[in-house]
Each structure stands twice: as C-alpha cells, then as structure tokens.
Image (cartoon, rainbow, N blue to C red; front, side, top):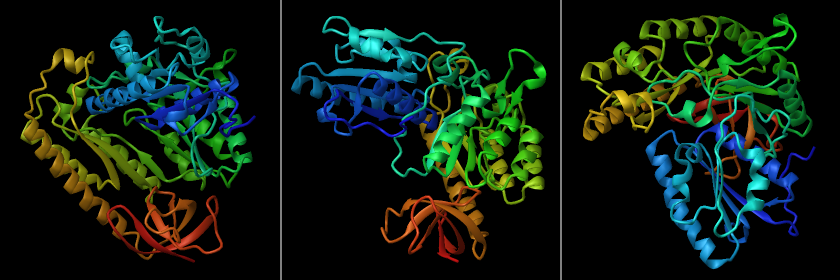
Length: 451
C-alpha cells in the first residue's frame, strides 16, 4: 500500500486545505487516499489544481469566517481557469449544507461521512448542477482505507480510532457535525500502526473526539470486546520503538485501567490532554460536562500518583453563558491547583444549533470575556514556565521530529511528557531517538544538549 502522495503530472490534480483539529488532518489524508485511488494526484500549487477542497472546522465562529474568506479567494481561481471545481468538506459542510452553494462559487459540499462518494460527486458536477452529500452514518469509520500521509517529517502520524461523539456538551457542535460515536475494529487500527512503522514512522497518535469511550463490540462474544486501555496496549506492542500518543480524553470517562496501562509501557507517552473547560461547578453543570471540580482534581491526583512525571494539558473556555466573576476565579484557582503544563484557551463562541444557543443567552460582555481570557493566558504562561523550569537538569529520551524553525543546525522533538525540546545533534536525523539533558527553558520550549 502506497501511503505517500502521488504527484504524477499526467493525473488531474487536487489541492487540499485543512482547518481545525487533528481529526480533520487525518480526514484529509483519508480524502486523498480515496481520490488517489480514483485517479487524482496531489498538488501543493492551488494554481495548478483541477479540484480545490477545503476541509473545514465549525468548532468556533472565527474558524468558519476564515473559510468564507478563502471561498472568496477560490472564486478567483474559477475566473482564471475554466472547469475548476471548488469543494467544501468536513464539519462546516455538515453544519451549513445548502447555504454553502449560495453565490455559485462552491460546486461540492460533503460531510465527514460522505468522503467515499467524492469521486462520484465530482464526476456529476456541471455548471448548473452542484453536488451535495451530508448524510451522517452510524457505521462509517473508514477502517479499510489506508490514509495517504500528508505530513512532511515522515516521523509522526495520526490514526483515527473512532468517529463522532455522544456527550452533547451544551456548547459543542461536534455531535451535530460528526454524528454518533462508533469505534473502528482494533485489528484495522493495529494493521495501520504496523504499516506506518514498516514505512519508517516512529510515533502514532490515536485520535477520537473522546478516545476513552472507544469500545469495539465483537459480533460473536462480549468476552472479545476491546476497550481503550486494551487497544492502547495492542498498539504499544507493535514495537517498543513505536511511540504511542492519544487525544482527546474526556475527564468523566478516562479509566484507571488506561492510567495503569500507560504506566506499564515505556513507549506509551506520559501525557494526557484532559480538557476541563471551567473550574466552576455551576458552569460545568451548565456545560453538561457530567463531572465536577472535585472529581476532576481527584482524577488528576490519580494520574500523578501512578505517573508523577505525566504531563497534563487542558482546554479552557472564558466567558461561557452566565459566567460570574466568582466562576472565573474558580477556573483560575483550579488551574493553579493542577499546574497545567500547557492549555488551549478560548473565549466562548456561540454555535448555532447547540443546546447553549437554544437555552442560554450569550450574556457575558465581549470586553469581560477578553479580560478574563487574557488573565487565563497570563496565568498559563507562568504555569508553563514553572513546569518547564522543573525539567532543567533532567535527562529525557527525545524523538527527533525535524529541524528547528529558528536554527537549521538544531533539531526539535518532544519528550514523552510532550514538552518541546531544541538541541544540536550532529550526525543524527529525524526519526532518531536521542538522550538529551535540559539546560534552560522558556515557557514554550526546553533548551537541551545531546548526551
């Protein structure tokens, strides 16, 4: 199986832009695999493309606004060259559906479960006949498709283990754009990991909206069902030289079995992304997160009791509906209590169709949201620096991922607990494991030397 892009100049060319999360990046690789099998070749030059696809995100309004801006740019390509096809795929396609066809720039709209139909949809397009398929599926996992890898380093790759989400948090559009949860057969996941390792990849990241909900039910016997902890072990056993990461965990669902499995295998990275969203029990209940502050802190305590060196990162929303100053202070105090290594931090952005949009007014003034977000960001910068400072003098096994953006004579890579290291390593190359000692740090980076 060829897992690298085909660039045959005799084939019609497809150009793919990807927005949003790691799942979207993996979806673009699935799309490319399907289109390559249908005779297309990838191009990185939009001016040479016969088909232009934007794989989109709807998680926040500013993500959608970026796509509308790009559609205006795509229109220029249609003016310059006859026959160019413009397609919007992914979450924004699923959410807006026919609205994307207004304006006659977009020829194709396909949701996350419709990628197999792309060759047929493209074939049926004519100037007065755009095509759309936004049907969601209860079965589609693309398990039989080997994604064509679009990464540049050939070291790290994503493996989608499940699709959809059943949690229906009140602010989140994902259940409406990606549908219900369904898990891939474990054999297909392990096969993909083996395929990647045999092609020189040294790290895989298992992806799902909520990996802890992974459960593959064997058609013949409940005794043969596979949960996430068991799948994690199966992938870790592919090779001790294959690092395994995963994202994202849902706090209410991460099990002690997962934590103990991580501790058992050195090649399962000691890092958990555990989105808290708020430190206020009032906000957590309104968000429908199904855990409270005390439960979250107890889970963090369990992780650190089993793996003291485990990195913990999170997501935080500032200014959710009805958030008071005390709710905000509760978030700040929880961040202090945990001491997160890093965080993704955002202002609340109301998403049409969600429970919050239907039920709760978006009533926190924009200037208050901004002030609270800035306070959260400043706090996390301090926490990140404190966390990194504790690494000075320690030694880490690091997988070289590529060269440093600031200095081509230095490499960059991540520690097991997901901290970025920069170091010189003459004679080495991306894909090598090296041992380094941390000399100094910033809030974002460890500065190290080769041992």
